[in-house]
Image (cartoon, rainbow, N blue to C red; front, top):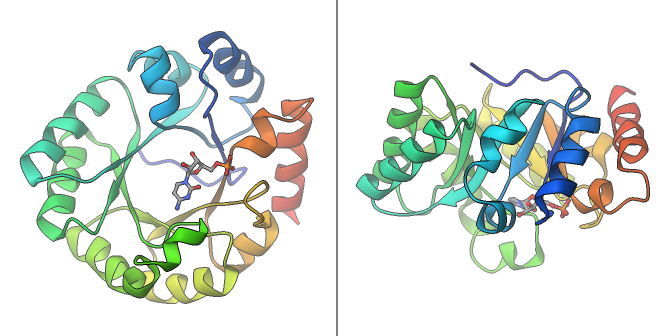
Length: 216
Ligand code: C5P
């Protein structure tokens, strides 16, 4: 199953308390296109949290998988068996490693997104210089989409041009300084928002505000 762009909002569920995560998911599950889990919540609550969150909406496992092909395949299989609809992997490990994720995803009917340029300042140290090559690699490996930064809309637009019809998920909105509407305008299909939603006094209202911005 592929994750459809409806609200265009994906929440990064980086809280580490299971009850808090489930309470937020229950409130927001119907409004967002997916919940993205990363290591903090899985290390704290266990892989089973994926299945628990999945009752509310799609789940994307942001494990930034970055190993040899066989290990990548094993990581993807466990993640998909746990119920994730998609997984995020790194591209700098090379085409064979990304291909292993894509092959595993195809077997399970799931999706793979490849990190190109990250959203934080350190992405300028190494990743930015190779971001467009990583886009090409993701496409050549048959990935469903890529991750590109909302913090640099001009770079996002450049990456969109290179990405053709691949989906773009864009983190860095809110706390990291990116703007939701600008990211969509630059070519993102979805924006990913974490702290600006789950740390808000009313996460539901915060999410609704982002959805409203994305509609315009
Ligand atoms: O709290 P915030 O909105 O900054 O969360 C962003 C989420 O997206 C985090 O889970 C972070 O690990 C992830 N991410 C990112 N930049 C990337 C890839 C993933 O911020 N390039």
